[in-house]
Amino acid sequence: MAVEIDGQRPVSSWIELIKDTSSAFHNGLNQIYSNNDDMKTFGELMSISHDGDRVTKLVDGKRVSTDNSCPAARLDALISDLESGVPQRVSRASLWCQSGGYNVSLPEIDMLVDIAMATPGVVGAGLVGAGMGGLYRGRRRR
Image 1: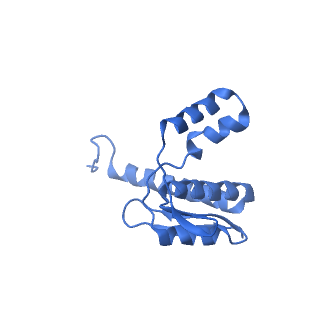
Image 2: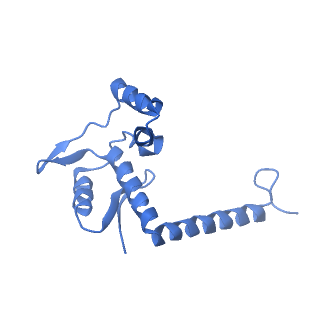
Image 3: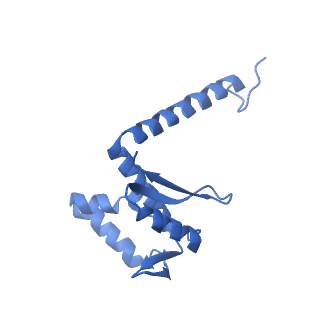
């Protein structure tokens, strides 16, 4: 008798599903890493994501606190961009282009990101993780 997890699928089918998903994920990453345009987009997404995590940013050579809140005026501007029909404005207002407002970074990590982003060849940098302490990650072209 096969062991079932959800009352319907045997464990072996879940293992195969996980293997297939993992394989597809790694194949997708390999495609991104081997294609410069995709790598640029991947880097931009890393940076957009970190912008929502930031607690500081560099302004005129000085580190200042950031405000990642999203006031009603900002939401109204995004809605206006989406409804404008102008491709550049619509694209800029897309959900994946919004950084969020988590404020979970540290000034030192923000500084590492800023240093990395000022380095030639770097396409993205940021804090990544899922609430277990996180880590800093950067991406550069090969």
